[in-house]
Length: 141
Image 1 (cartoon, one colour):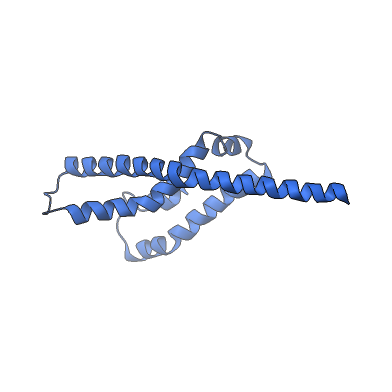
Image 2 (tube, rainbow, N blue to C red):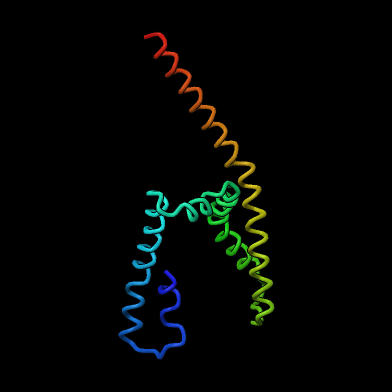
């Protein structure tokens, strides 16, 4: 997977090499990710499995999914509110990225609290209710 990221780093540009890299980098990265999943599922890498299934990643994963859904809306809002073009500087770009990051995760937290968690609670309640009905039928038989 590192090869997919750094293959062309500090190399002479060659058209065929760049074309092969651009044609295969996504496939190779996906194969590397599939291999990691395979190792975790078959129990061949307990350390990696423990790191990736750490319980404190669960809230972060929920926020990250909400951020994935909201991030584009925040960028579009920012661009539509802009009255004129900004002058490019590295400092301003860093501040804009920081602004997007903070605003996206703040909005993600609010969306998660208002929508995602109540829906998950209702689904959990319905599944428990369904299991109780199913278990009572087995007792009657």
